[in-house]
Length: 593
Image 1 (cartoon, rainbow, N blue to C red):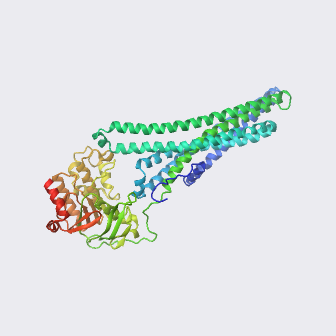
Image 2: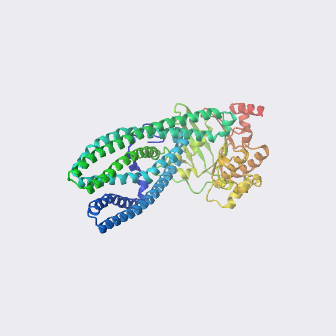
Image 3: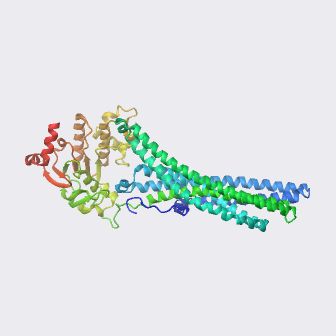
C-alpha cells in the first residue's frame, strides 16, 4: 500500500489482533505475570465446588465437626488465593493494556509524521486523530481487560467441562448436546457485530474529522454565520453514528439474550435429570451440588465469552484501521544508496537547478502544475518567483523540499538530484517562511526554538531581535514564556509572521524559501523585517514567492511563471521595459495600490 489507505479493507477478524504482538512483546513480563495470576485464579475458582461437595457429603452427613472445620478452612484458603490472584491479574493486565496502547499510539504517530502530503490528500487529519485516540482506546479495553476475561473464561470453560465429565459423564453428555445451540447464534450475530463495529468506528471518525476541521476555522465559520449549518451537519453525522451504534448494541443484546437463555434453559433440564439420579441413588447430593456449580461456571463462561466476543470484534476492527495506517508506505523515501550533499558549502550557499521538470499532483493527474520547466538559481543569488495564482510557484517550493517527486526531468541541489539525497539531510538545507504562519500552542520561546531545537537561549534571543520580535515581547504578560494559545490566537497576523521569520533566522540554513514573508506586516514593521531578511539573505541562496511586486524590485533576478512554464526572466527594470506579463501584473497592482 503506497501513499493512501486501502480502499477495500479486509474483513475484520479477531485474528487481526495478532498484529498487536510487536507492541506486547516488549512487556512480556507483564503478560507472563498476568497468565500466572489468571491460572491461579481459575484453579482456585474450580476448587470451590470440590470443597462444597466435601462439606455436603462428608461434613453434614457424618456430623463430623472436624471435617466441617477443615472444609471451611479450605474454602477460606481458596478464597484468599482467589482474591490475591484476581488482584494481581487486574494489576498486570491493566498495566499491560496501558503500556501496549502507549507504544501503539507512539508508533502510529511516528509513522504518520513521515508520510508524504499525498497521504493527507486522501485522508483528513481528523480521521487520523480519531484512529489515534478512539481506536486505541478500544484496543486498550481489550488488552487491559477483555482479553484477560476471555482467557479466564476459556480456562473455566475447559476446566469446568473436564470436571463435569469427571463428576457425571451422563449429565455432561447431555450438556454437550446444547453446545451447537449456543455456538450457532454466536457465529451468526458475531459476524453482524463485527461488521457494525467497523461501520460505527468509521462514522465516529467522520464526525471527528468534521469537528476538527470546523473548529480549526471557527472564526471563519462565525464570520460567515455558518454555525447553524455546521451544527446541523455535525448533528447528522452524530445521528448516523448513533444509529449504527444502536444497531450494533441490538445485535450484541440479542446475542447475549439467546446465549444466556439457551445456556441456562439447558442447564435447568440437565439438573432436572440429576435430581432424579440423586433420588434413585445413582449420585450423591454433594456430587449434584458439585455438578451444578461446574455447570454454572461453564454456562457463565459461555455467556461471558459471548460478551467478550463482541469486544474482540470491535478491537479487531480498530486494529485493522490502525494497521492500515502503519502499512501505508511513504511515497517519498530515502534512496537505497544515498549521496551525501557536500558538507563544505561553496561561497554563496547552494545552487539550484531544474531541468525540464514536469509535474502533476497525484490527486489531479490531468492538471499539469509544471510543464518542462528549466531554471537555475546561482549560489547566493536572490531570485523572485512571480506569476498569477496557479502558475506553479508553491508547487516549485514543494518539489524543492521533496514533498513530491517530479514526473519528468530532475531537480538538483549543489549538482545532486534530490531523489539521490537523504530526505532529512535535504530538508535541513532549507529555512521556510510560509505565507500563512503556523504557530503552535506552546510558548513564544518554544515557537522560535522550533526552527532549531538544539539552539541556545542566546541564539533564540538573537533571532528574535533580528526579526523584530522583541518589539512586542515586552507587551506580553510573561514575555518569551507567554503561552500563545491554539494556533497563536494571542498574536496578531503580523506578530505571527515575525515569529515565523525568527524561526527561519534561527534555522540558519543555506537556502531560504520565502513565501511573501512580509505580507501581513504594516509598513513600519515590513521595513524593519525587510532589513532583517536582507541581512539574512547575505551568503545564502534565496527564492522568494512574490505576490506584492513592490517587495521584489531589488531581487537579483525575477522569474515569471504562467501555467507551470517560465515565460519571462530578468530584473525588475528589464521586465518592465519588455512590457510583457510582468509589466501587466505590475501595472495592475501599482494602479490598485
